[in-house]
Amino acid sequence: MPDAGAEDGLVESVVRINRTSKTVKGGRRFGFSTIVVVGDRQGRVGYGFGKANEVPGSVQKGLSAARRSLVRISIARGTIPYEVTGRFGASSVYMRPASPGTGVIASKSVRAVMEVLGVTDILTKCRGSTNPINVVKAVLAGLQSIRAPEEQMRLRNGGRS
Image (cartoon, rainbow, N blue to C red; front, side):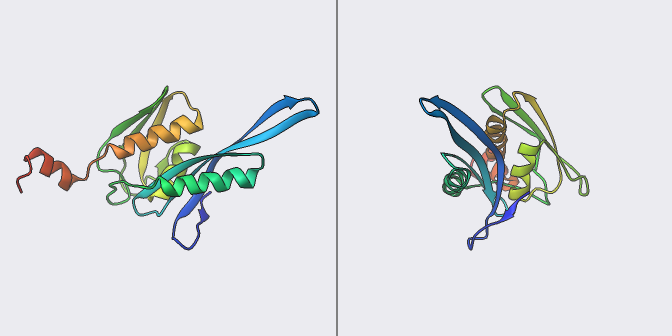
């Protein structure tokens, strides 16, 4: 569930905390990696990946990386303007606009991105690998390929208005 952000108005959501271990002479040494998404619920979203020996440190590193990677996404009336497929590695995420009242039909990783982005109605389907890191990257790759209708018309008209 998204948490209220700091004074910059961003909403933060931890997608996944992964524990790793390394066996050393004295026993096991644990480390943590975290993937975090942040957004303003008005069309800006970013993700970050943090690694540290403690959970709070990895979350903090992920949040600062996510704030640096913010991008603007074109959304209209709580959904995306047209269907799109995002791909990253072996993960593929199909996203389709939905009518008002449908809600966010998505996996945990995709839902986290959509909630901080401000999308309220969308249909999604994950195919291939469901690794949360690759799914988040695939969703953002698909969303970044979306063009606003005005921009699309300008591109089609060759720059003429």
